[in-house]
Length: 248
Length: 249
Image: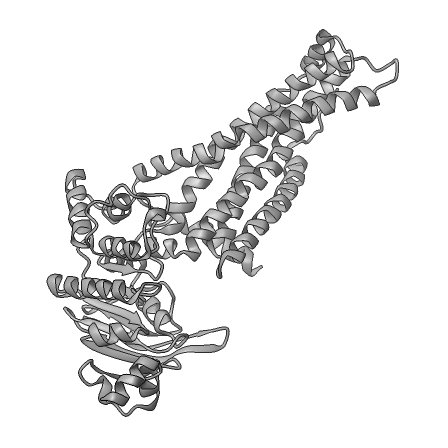
């Protein structure tokens, strides 16, 4: 509970005694590159394999003559938008970006760079952490959109070339009974995960004490805590936002 | 002048500072000396507010620092420059950007900022290192950049935490001389934390000796070697070189 209290104080301290607006614009754009643009490769790789595997597995599990091939596309779409692109990507993102944020802030703490900023009269949480959170909130939903597109696309290729499903059937499945609310749901989840990953990782890195070992521990802790928070948030958001459940 | 009264601090029940009081005069180099782990760095971190003391008060030229609100603290902090043990340079920025950094939060025109940064770099003898990254600098150069950054916004108070740790005696002496020159030239209140005998001999106008979290002696550098305080004598003559000098004298 003590840690949770400190986390909320940490979040609150970002919003008081802020620097000038233009300082945040530049910092946030820099962070967008580090956090968002540099994550595109890993998002692409994971999404492509995820889509292909899903297509093959769905076909393998839908062997009944009553189950049309279009259900592969339908299943890929629903799983991708509702769960896999926002949540699985968040786990991957926590591993890449969460550890980076915690490591960077931790290194700044042990090399007294954060103390140096404080001495200059700068609100260090606001100056260092707020741009990272804003950049994550801006870029993660975009990465989820890219991921969802690539997952469904790779699913199409796997369906056509590996399990011999006609592309028209797969595309028919993708479009079948589409509920646009599922996209909103994916975006809500993305924003929640982006906030959790960036703030938890920053909190872990910001308050370390010790040396290089502590930086390593903080990075590990940041990823572990972020993953737990993502899964908890996934359950809570699904429970809250998917009522009544989607029907075919 | 900086005044601090009854500063006490304990970490996990272990008392690190026990009711330490004193005054740092303007235009002088004030030394805080003592063996490792005696609370020197914690004392100056308490004074500048990086560590919150359990009790005690600090005033900067009569302005309450610890008791004042956040805004008052920020106003005082903008007048403080600090040289950290490792330099604490921002490693993603060049030397010039590091020195410019404290000015970027002021309303000074861009050209004036660059002139001021270049002047400070020149003052510390690093006129040609503007574009270098901190990773390409030697220990002594990092300290010089740290000093330039600390004085760039015309700081009234300069805190130096072990300014010549990790440096050879020659470079350490140059850093000490630089700190002394800057203090006298700009009439800064300078506080240097050190356990280096060379610095004590060459630098201090006024000295505070800390032993096991308490201030056990204070006085001028002229008096320090005549003091009978046992812990101070033990500290001063702990090095072989000092013992040899003492025996010869």
